[in-house]
Image 1 (cartoon, rainbow, N blue to C red):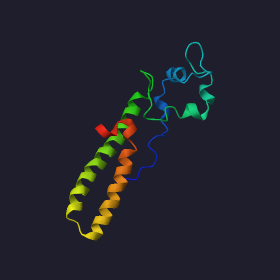
Image 2: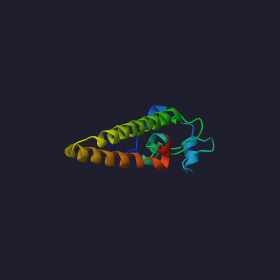
Image 3: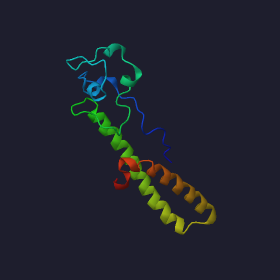
Image 4: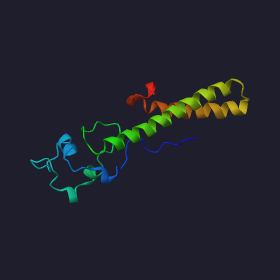
Length: 127
């Protein structure tokens, strides 16, 4: 079964950054120049280095990370959909399972429900 590590914190590939300053503007960074460029780009701190670390947060239009964010979201949506399909199968199997298997199936059903519910705030009920 899929074990979920951390659905919120990811380090995006640096090569996607267009150095446009849109994220800095969005984050109201004090190191943003009047021409929307980062004044400390080469020595930026860890919070800037990890932007956008939350794949569920909104990012500015035209940001180089937009496609990467989309791919990451779709990856987790697929995991949730697969978990929902497995949940349906387990509920069917549970009806005709022996006692030992029922316990095993019920435990997996509980794990899947916890996993799926952890994504509800992102819209997982509709995936």
